[in-house]
Image (cartoon, rainbow, N blue to C red; front, side, top):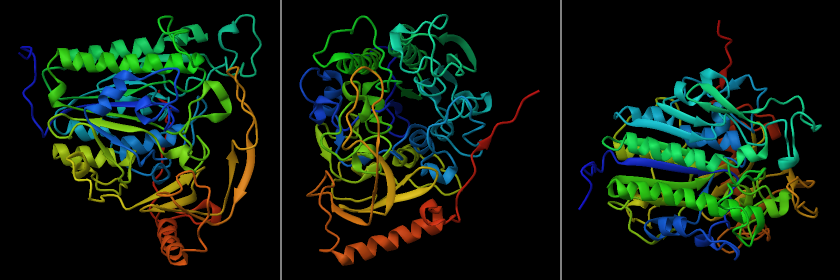
Length: 474
């Protein structure tokens, strides 16, 4: 029997729980083939009860950009949010951009956000000014502090840091800093603090539709993990962190079950970009995809994605259709009957896939932008055309395994064509075999340059918008 507080199921206003990982690679979950040493049973159960995507892409292979795309349904360079902004930034999300929270507020949703925001740290850019009713978390990445990678050994009173000019890491509740993360021991609390706040939000809003955006700070380095999971895996600190993240997902799912909300809740689990490979044992893995975070090869942008919605999504299904984080925004609009903004967005409605139509192709192409506005590749179906560009690489240099970053290599490439159906690792250039495909995809790139521009060839683009500018309040 359902609890008395259980919601009446309404397919037009399901609860939405969006769990967004940081730097989790395509090969970091056991349901995606993670190596032995730890398991992710709660996330695996989420996949078994829903839909697992195998061709799902973040908006861009870096933090701020990927979150901007997720929240607005736009390529991040369209709205002027690129890279990974820090405490010195004088810009953030523009108030004229509609966020996912503002979209769902049209239908009266309660909206809460827990975790890493990274769309601007000044008050005007924080979640409560952009559609959220409740917020607890960090304004940017957990390595954007004066500790850098000194970790547990750091004492702000006695230890010299190469980031001594950085502020301490603020933990924000609503719009106010309630404490500072001064050492990695402080960060060990984050996943538990986030999880407790997420559960509190669900319980508080259990009688009405709610949207919870739960953006973990992990598995971004420096890796932090509570005492209850330290030393529990056979994969060192990274495995311990993965076990704690899985525990967190399990706690959220248990709360939904206990409150009778599972049947009326769409749960989405995905990641902002691929792993930061030069951290070695402190980083995840790409399951054989090329390169990692910060690269437009698929190791940087193809990410795990799981969606569960018992009333709609057939359990235990797998989709090989092309999809992206920018598609979640218009899909939620289609589900709830809310109005998308009048300005251009780039996402497409993938609701037919959620309903079990694995023959449809809502998304037929995808653009890989990086840096400020550099078009580095385009995808069309199973084909990927890599455009000439310079890039940082993890190939040919050794990572470090002590929690500190190893070096990058510098590389460049010419025009390359890959058939991702047969060559997901992007190893074999087949452009000489398929000149007709190359021509079609070059036309796709030309259209993108007219629309969004391309710094590589000094094309400005017609339809880019500006980020929000910091305004000093009186």
